[in-house]
Amino acid sequence: MRGILVIFDQLSNTESRIMTLLEQKTQLIRERARELGFETCGFSKARRLVEEESRLESWLKEGKHGSMSWFERNFDKRLDPTLLVPGAKSVVSVLCSYNQPELFKKTAQSAETPRISNYALGEDYHTILKDKLYELYEFTSEINGGLDGRVFTDSAPVLDKAWARQSGLGWIGKNSNLLNKELGSFFFIGEMIVDAEFVYDSSTTDHCGTCTRCIDACPTDAIYEPYRVDGSKCISYLTIELREAIPDEFHDKIGQWIYGCDICQDVCPWNRKAKPASEPRLMANPEITDKNIDYWEELNLQEYRRLFKGSAVKRTKFEGLTRNISIVSHNLKEKKDVL
Image (cartoon, rainbow, N blue to C red):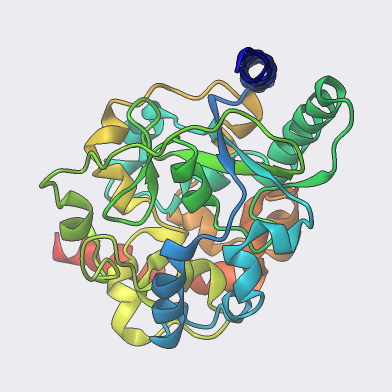
């Protein structure tokens, strides 16, 4: 009997040492993530997101993704990171804020200023986040004694909001955005999917309560019920992803938005409490925010290329942006005529 107890003690001590090493490794990565400019970092076990499967399947069957056909591809990979990265054991999620409170006073409260979604006012976040993630990956590989995996930020079939929620970085709000008590929702999400193990975080609880401001404020009724968004009606989809003519029924509802939309975030109480971002490359380019409708109406291809070099705005292409400008110009002139 004494021999069995000794074995149990040895096993217990071994497990304790392993856990201590995992805790140390996890903490070191959190600290390095903050040093690199990520506001927060969370860890979750790589597994199939069974709870997301029926929701995603229904959303696709109902055509809520509009013309974004890429959502129909790689269905299983979206749900299971081990299919995307064979041998994956963990998903490490990070948040990088682009919150600029002064923009709300400067643009959101101006009824005559053409607007571009805040996330696209600085340099292209894909490059910035990936640069940081590659550094975090190298650091993780070093302290782990080697690593196999990949980094992502809007670049592959990864359910980033679901993984960030699993990692305790926030909850999914009624507008379907990830919300964080300290950061609001004006942030980018990135992740590393790797074959190392860590101490995993627990998901947080929902803090939207009875608030329905995002639902009430959406001009196109894209948020058709709490936590459900019809992407094909979203102004961001209409002004960025839709390559065809925007249906007439949405023209007046687009309002001032020539690229994207922040309405459901502008009205969210958590964004009024959020701390400002610190990454200078994500700050708004004043040359973009200071332009009035007269400037945008005269935009040519050469100026478009100059102004949006290295910018996410190029996703909608010159033809798409001028299409949007034409609609916004009409909306602003109609508003002026009414006044």
